[in-house]
Length: 263
Image (cartoon, rainbow, N blue to C red):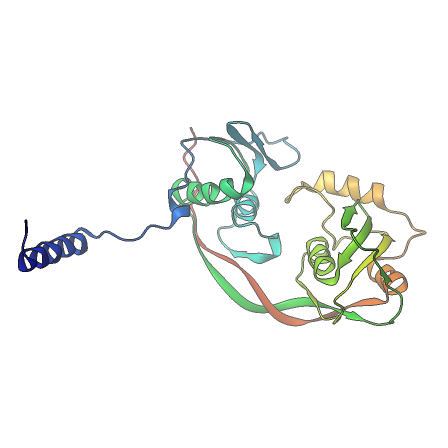
């Protein structure tokens, strides 16, 4: 049986060994890595862009580095800045194992980008262009019935049953590629239907980075000259206005990256 002094000496020696050996608490996300990763340049005539978890593996098609950052950090493209000239140009096909839920795949993609693309990023809050969602004409929103909570969006339409203003602001932000800040002061949930003619500033519902040819085709298909713009539709149907302004924009800055070695 050890005495008190002996035990204190053992504890002190053990602590010294831990410090000398550089043992640190590990971020659990840092341990989430793909076991196998295959990267190839995408065919030059490839169209579309996306990620598809398929059972035990993940397939990523025709992806730019910017798209991969969007997926890995769950961001919109306007939240990413900096990086090399090919950030949103060169494209790759990637297969990796294991697959799983997106919540688990995202940190795996982050680690893959660090390992294979040498990606170094930092988070930054900067002042940039934003939209403030404000009330322009009161009394036009219809309160939702209890228990509702459905939302669908088309190429140039939106149907909401039980949507709050925070969710509407987030949805508009994704469409308009700019942060939309809810300044309505409205705390309820509402039912509404919107239909409009999209313009070039909108990101049509599709996977991030949809190629220009496919985007133009979708834009033409959704165009209906009899419909107003999204901005006018919001004012006429909901009594809401998008007011341009300046505000904090949280995002990722790409410090450095290199082309991956294909395998």
